[in-house]
Image (cartoon, rainbow, N blue to C red; front, side):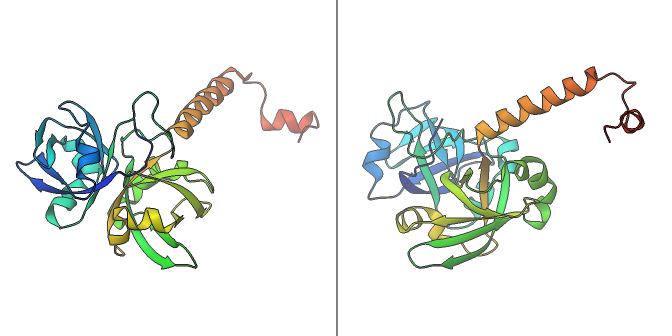
Length: 231
């Protein structure tokens, strides 16, 4: 598990079709690699990966086909874009962001990045080819002032439309300059993970509603309620 506070930036290179070598960029190389061991989990642009082998300035990880299909990692290898890196939490670690699992729900696309007085406003929406995926896995968890992870960064939704087709975040200078958000251009793809607490609440409520509906007496219909004066 992670908390969405990025420790360093890195770059990805392909070793095989689904095996990658990641280089941790200085000056924070020491802090993130000093405690990294083989078998540890590490978030790469919000995707939970396992460090299978360590190198002098990074690590090697394997990415499943399903993860490659649902995230932006395959595009990262084709470009020189940076990835955000975060070590997994330990008992006693500060939870400075929110609960981030590293299980990406889908891909979003940067629509615009607008500088404001002392921050940046970034708006994201579904890429054309990912509209259905967005509707199924991301849209239900978009609420104003709710938490969301974008490329593994814990952020707060400043605004979103009622149908959940886009959302805007306000980013402070530290977050903007210390993550790969400052390198994004309109059209670039990002990994999005909804709040895990919201997912559990949705699951519990939906099961409760289904159970309640199945137990309602079939004799109670809209016509019955009208005749009895309830409607």
